[in-house]
Image (cartoon, rainbow, N blue to C red; front, top):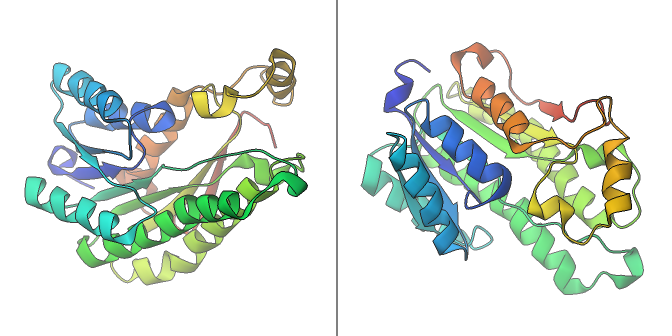
Length: 246
């Protein structure tokens, strides 16, 4: 996309972790950024403060992406503020690792409502409001290439996201919009480390080629490529970003 400094991006779940780093990284390119959050208003405002301090431009908008009405409002407020939407990064998600016999109906509904429904209907809003030659990035996981106990529910939702990404590619292709998924391996974030022992984390490090966890910057660099003109011929794909984890 030429004149990238005129572009506007929505990053869901951008108050922390990978989403936060992505928001800051693309803002540094001159892209105007909407930092979406569900409950962490203070953290979202801290991200905006960092962006603005570094000569970027951004706003924070609250929306629970599992609710279609709030997703619609997120897009509406973005258009009211910036007049356009060029990039959608569906980063928001949840992960609760439990064995099958401990998974409740609420766990199931929460995962599919946020990870799948949220992604799907955000894509629908993008189809309504995006012009030609724009970008959509969804989030999967490299865990799909493993068989870890306790990850069945989370992996099921991300498998759905990958299939959504593939199936929508031709529909978005009619408007020259690319849609791809990024599938990180273990990344040094609160989402990943919470509930894990030091031994478990060390074990994960040793499963990739470089003996470390991924960092949020590793993922943001791939996002930067996928929203650039250099990725024009890539769509419907899932990009594994995991240091050889799988």
